Length: 307
Image (cartoon, one colour):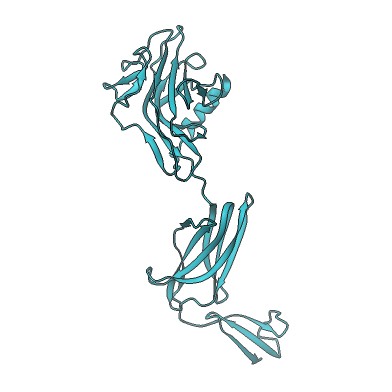
C-alpha cells in the first residue's frame, strides 16, 4: 500500500499539464457525463458539479460503488495507444479507501489500469490532474470507476470533475536544443535530438523578412535512435546587415513533418574587422610575426598579405 501513497502524493507535489495530441473523449465541465451508477452512491451530483459519493463532505461506510461508461470509440489517426486522465479532488482514508479505474473492450472482462489491486488513496487536496498508463486504442472501449471505503473513518471521498482520453502521439524526434550564433564570419546553426523515430531528414531554412525562406541545407536524419545526436550547419551565405532567422523542419519517411520555432542571429554589424590572423600553416600569429599571413574577417572574407 505504501507505493500508492508515493504515486499519488508525487503528482500533488509536482504537477504539470501534459499534452498528448488528438483528444478522442472528454467530459464537458459541469455537465452530467451520463455514465451508469451501480447503487446511486458514486454518481454525477449537479450540486457540486462532480462525480462523487456525496457533496456534503461525507460518504457511507462500506461503500463499494461503480460508475460505468457506455462504449467509447477511441480510434486515433496517429497513435496506437491512448492516455486516460482525470481531474480529481477530495480525500479518502489512506490505505483503507480507494478509487480504482478499470477498462474493458467488451464490457464484460475488466482490467485494472494500474494493475491488480492498485488504486488511488490519500489526499488529492483542492484538485490535481492524474494521468494513467497508456492502453491500446479500440473502436469500443468501456471505462469503470470503483470507489471503495471501509467503516473506520469517514472522509470526503474523491470528486471527479473531468475525464479525458488523448492519443498517445509519439513524436518523430525529441528536440532538446536549437540555437544559432556568429562564428568567424559565419553563422553556426546547431540542434540536438534526444531520440528519433522514423526520421528521414531536416530542412534548415533562412529568412530576413519572416515571409520568404531560402533553403540553407538538407540534413539527413538517423532514422531511429534512442541516443543523443548533435547536428551542425555553417551558413556563409546569409544576408549581411540584418537579423537573420532560421527555421528547422523535421520530415519523417512517410512525409509527415514538424516545424520548430524560429531562432535568430543579429548580423546587423556593418563594420568589417579582422577576427584572427594565421600563417600559411594555419597557426595563429600576432603582430610581431614576420612573413606572409592570412586575415580572417568578420564578413567571411580573407586577405593574404605580408606582415
